[in-house]
Length: 400
Ligand SMILES: *Cc1c(COP(=O)(O)O)cnc(C)c1O
Image 1: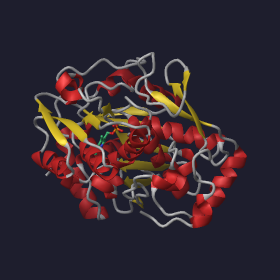
Image 2: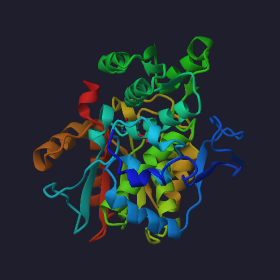
Image 3: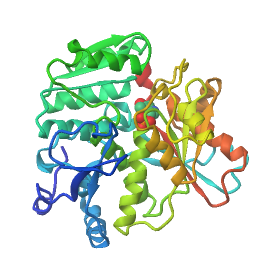
């Protein structure tokens, strides 16, 4: 845990957080913040609401330079009731790296940056969301926690549950690399496995054997707090770029928590007066063999049809159906964004070039985002002087 200057403790305890309530992302119905919450009565994700104004923005801006670089530096914009007793593995505060040598035909003066999330605990940005979700489950009295995962969410859940002293269970598709299950067991988690995809694995948890003890299900957007953790990527980007948001954010999209979270972060920063009107344009990147959001975006739909036969070995992006599809599509449209499908065959070359030209090790999801970025640049999508931030979301070693 990071040492905290004692004078900060006074304004960081219960009652000082700026979170006020939960709001249904579909209907706007409001619920109390400190009761267990899964889906809203409308079957949609809850989102955490905050009381924000420019005076609070100024207060936060002044407090930040004295705080350690983890995602907890944004404590007022996070929903914990007991900040001092939190479980903290040092999540967040990842590097934002300028690409200098990547050949980029069509970049014409646009700047490419990579937000490299691999250095998070358990090797992916899933740590951000599961840190918040497990912390909240712990302080709201969960008897245990569980989720279905393509791999990285299971690793993060298992690690944070271990640190919180909570029993954990994960459900993985049977073809998930075996090292993932082994690492989950190292943290003491029970591992279930199912043929098929994430959607099939999730069924294990709804059966009595999977849910009998009332373990809380922390699967993507089924509870409000993973999005709050992912939101910190947007807060960090803003701070790292001197409170000027980038023009584009290219994001390898699975369940969509990251886009939902960052979209929320930018709205909150705006209400705090910390950023101007400009909103980054989101680019959602999926694999050609599993691209439900790309298809729905192209057809102008408000939600996505499930993808029938998903084929991709980019595990983080093999999500045929997502609960938050309508929120992702809304964020793409509100930000004048794009949705792009990438061919699997180009990933090894893109990853090799990132290693050779930039000194970066990118995972398959990050390679997909980088490939989409270079494709958009070649089309002339980026104007001179624009800043493009590409998310490199996980450590490639997690899949070995
Ligand atoms: C889960 C995951 C994604 C997809 O993230 P979402 O926010 O759920 O869309 C991308 N990359 C990696 C490495 C992941 O583990």
